[in-house]
Image 1: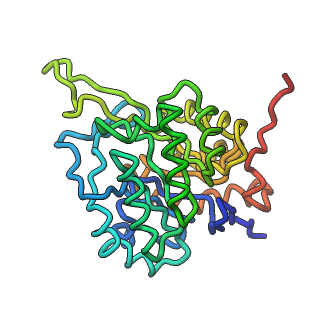
Image 2 (image 1 turned 45 degrees about the vertical axis):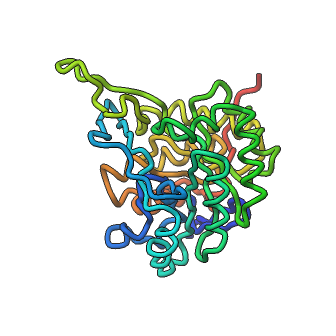
Length: 308
């Protein structure tokens, strides 16, 4: 018997819990000749800002042991061109929900992007990027400060006509505290978590390998830490969580679901295998069938923890 792979997230029903992560899947439509887009539950766009952003100069991606560093710098076409040219083609894939990752340097810019997106059709939810470690202002400045996070999320929720998912930074003392703050001011869900601020040095030139000096570390190297953060966020709030960080296999995905995630995001794996999201969706269904799991949603939070 085929398992039920649907999950409910922030009032939405996804056909399965596999979501392509922001910054690794373009604007979605670029992957239509590579990935069967209707085979995944959703995807998150690149960070969309009020005006186009060129990003950082190369080199801006560096391979590391069991992962990669990136300092793309939120390069994107800006909200107007996104709505006009990038969003409409996704109507061809109604089963794949579109989450728009929203970024700004100021609260006003975040709100302006959301208000403009409110007027567009075909968007299922917003993912509020308060955690990018690759820009010099905005982004992580909000996600790392409790007061700033509370104010921004509260204002964004007031402006939003769609579910608001907050992408938290792992570069904080307590992910649980940040999760609770988001819940208290009305967030509809959480993405846990973004990349870890890190760096790499070329010992021969004695220079940083990234022009931005530091970047965001992702990939299998961060999985155990990200898994712990999903577990802590799930214990701190009842908000649905999109878990991410080094997910490559179906077993990786199941770990995040057991820790408390409702759905999972796949990012760095798509660099090594552009069809990683589609493969993972199929592998997860196969895993559920092989292990007698009738509903994938039953795995969420089903971790058996020894009594304290």
